[in-house]
Image 1 (spheres, helix red, strand yellow):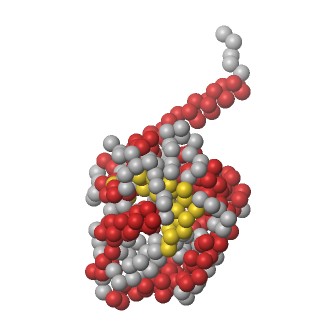
Image 2: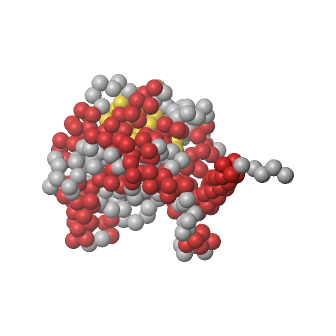
Image 3: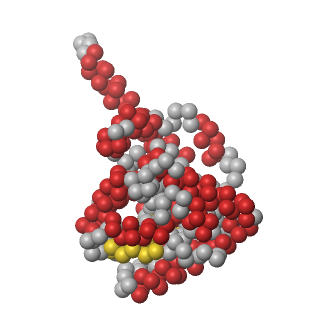
Amino acid sequence: MKKVPVIIRVVLFVAIFLLLNHWLTRAYISFTRQPYEYEATRRGFNAVKGQVSFLVLGDSHAQNAVYTPMIPGSYNFASSGESYVLTYYKMRQVLRSDQLDLDVVVMPVSLHTFSGYRLQQIGKQDPAFWAQYVDYIQLGIETGKLEYFFGERIKAEFAYIGGLEEVFDIVYPTGPWQSDRLEDGFLNFSERFSDRDEAEIVDIASKRAEFHFNRVEYIDPLVVNYFNRLLDLLEDKGVQIVLVSFPSTPDYQNAVNEYISVEDHLANMEALVEGRENVLVLDYHDLFLDHYEYFVNSDHLNTAGAKVFTQILLRDLENNGITWEAEAQP
């Protein structure tokens, strides 16, 4: 019997290994990520995207502020720690769907939205989830961190290695899943910042401002670059873009003023989108200065605050003549 050449056996072995590894990785990710915010939000969106004409994008400030159950035909597709770099890659893929017909997209331009810390946060996001969207090689080249992001890609391809603890967390959960707090992508929080004492409120605001602005650029050119790419994608689809500076507490704004000028922020954001006809900028950073009970911390709204905020947002959208096909979701 004629022997199969070594090179063919090696190629077959590698092909079978890669196929099995891909299947094992997909199965592992699907099982272990199902209760968490990212995967639950993605699955929820895919289930209703044919009825979505009003979409919320961005980070946790958008996810915790726009109460999409109040908005027919909407979905909150934002997620914690999501920079415009990640949002661009996500939407580049999502917008290819023939099912999706967007009229309005709401996105953040809050005080820290374009801060360089956003690039630092990319490496802290789950590569096993984001690899389905992000071209890590392209991102590595553009950031000058090819080796790092190539490593993230490898981690994503072998996500199951050392993941026994994650499996046990699913089989034997120690508390409620994040997915239990999601409504149309909106992440519910009942905690009230007003329940904390004054010293703690000030301390939290100071630490969060330092986290967002210390030793990084206030407006990072690469984040702006991906933001503009995202705007181009949405404009090509004829989408009305609404950029929102979300509410924050006065203690947070005072702390941020040590790094940047809060007063100049709106003008800076409007300058970023100058010349774009289908973009509306709305500033609410000082909307709830006397309402700490509407916040879960210094710069995130809780569910009660989000419901009040969303009513105001809807009123202002109507006043600006912005409409969408409000098909009720099943």
